[in-house]
Image (cartoon, rainbow over all chains, first blue to last red; front, side, top):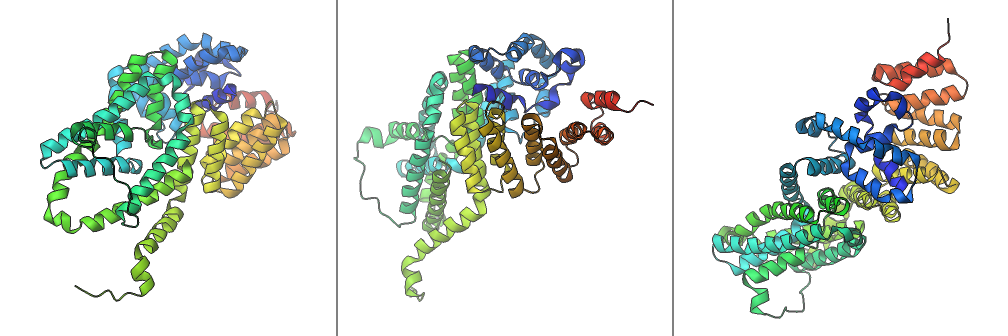
Length: 312
Length: 190
């Protein structure tokens, strides 16, 4: 089955074969696409080495033999050129380039992970997190500074989970296999929150009010910790690229650092949303429209619940 | 305070009615996004080498919206790759690409992949040629489709037509080495 995946990955990069083809045209006949894959993806080469024992195929041996050559060719091009040529509509290409960047330049990789975190945080699937921190900070704080502290605690909770996942990426395949459950869980959460915000249902239970866990920085941290488990599909390319480092290079610390960067990036919009929470809560003009805005957000949440349930 | 003069049903169930409208209209409008997201999930699983689960999500993407070609392409490619070892998977690849091409008549990649499957695995050159011709009709800039059309034509015994196709390939990409070699090899000697 893995062989199928190799071929599938290999078919994604036909346009980058020319340097090798010119040098070794005769030898590469029939191995065209496999070579492309090696040229494009350090991580996939290591993946191939990992499962090579399952596929003692001559072709696979062949492109391992040429790995050194292809890597040196790849380094001839500048990093900027490398990124300019990416087809950003192709998820394979984006993920592969991220993998390359991680292998080539740690600083750039961290910057990309932060950017990926920011982008994924702005997507609709992050709405439940935003709603949670805004509600929490709005209820708990009166000043922007206090709200910022609570938001940072919330982000710290998210970062702890992401960093742990980065370090333990060897078992990430298993985590992905249960994400169907996580999607249904997210859907249920969105549905309950949404219906409650539209005032169509009243949640019958009250959480026990334990000061240390339901208030203050500890409460915000635990809230962030819980919401970090809502894995959104838009975060996947970045997460997979980072986790490939841990899984295929065996560098747990590097994987943890990259995922921490992703968590920090993810936290930037959350921080801004949380900081503004006291203003939303206490401003009379905002208060006037609060019910309407809350109900609008509730409809969005119920719609998101349907989205998560459909794609789970 | 103003009296609510709306009809009883609307007055009582207004939020439910809005909710149903939001869900129905939202689903209709965003169905391609739902389908693409399901496809995207399949892609994540494929990257983690969980092929069975990937196929499941690709199929789900197709079920959600058949007019999004990504699910058809991804599922068909997986069947096509397995089709080298299994006749059943080959047939499934053919069926997937055929149905996908019918549901997405403006997508040139699906008929091209159908052409490849017929050519490489089934050695059914007549069907391969028909599929490639369909592909280049939709996307005349696809040099790979022209190349496969040329090889299919050559296999059917029409070298002259094949060379015509390869010339088109070279007009699209002058560096397409195999087309240049094929023209040199199969061009009639004068």
